[in-house]
Image (cartoon, rainbow, N blue to C red; front, side, top):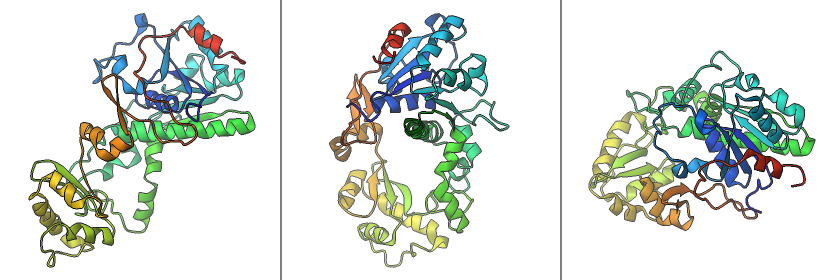
Length: 373
């Protein structure tokens, strides 16, 4: 088998953000993923920051087959309905109500395929006052309450690129929802609608923080806690060569290991637990770290439990001995691809390949998806 999802057929209506990402995750795990895109003569012209990203360079398109269909044409919609009748999963990322207006809503599709897992992937979900609002990752993370906590003390919240809302909360949790629904469908013979909202997903990711807040161990004042840059033992420090070192020595044993290898007398340093002295402790550590290069500090802490690592660029991460040993990144067609994750002993994921360009005839896909083929 090639991946644990081999044999699963997934039909996707092209979309932004988490839609292509969840498609890639499913394809990596062996699913056959077919994406419906607009015909070339009807492609929307919207200026974006990804202008110039060609199909062969767009990593999230690996393992995906594209078919060009005009969804505003009755014949085009009929061809999608026919394909969905033999799919296991259907994914759309439109605002609530759009799929219904196209005649491709859950009611239409499940009437022909009772075991279909119908996935709706949006920013704010199918219900609620914001359900029709446009947005991006920064908006969904802000809506969940999480962005407020992502700041240094006295500074503005810092957007987590688009890794948290689009890809963790939308894509990764969306894939979890899909596979959970597939397990249920296999057991009951009946599919269901999966409402994946990125704002919901980010909220779920804060579960541990909510417990810490309830216990009085995590303040709503950003940049004052042990995980949000408030603590000097969970911080990044600039080295002599301008590169950075990441320190995560939270536990007392790990912290002792960390300061014992700094090479200076720390007998009069403030106690790790004395929050009132954290600014002074941060300044002391920062001063010491600036005395050596990042490479020198790597040698000092190699093989220890100090929880100290270099802050690597993507190119450095690809060459790193540990990452190389696990083949965490692969160069495919001149592009750095992250390897599929997680890893399976009996059904390893697909080997990343160059994303295909162009489209395939939907008739060919439909013929292959006929039961028994």
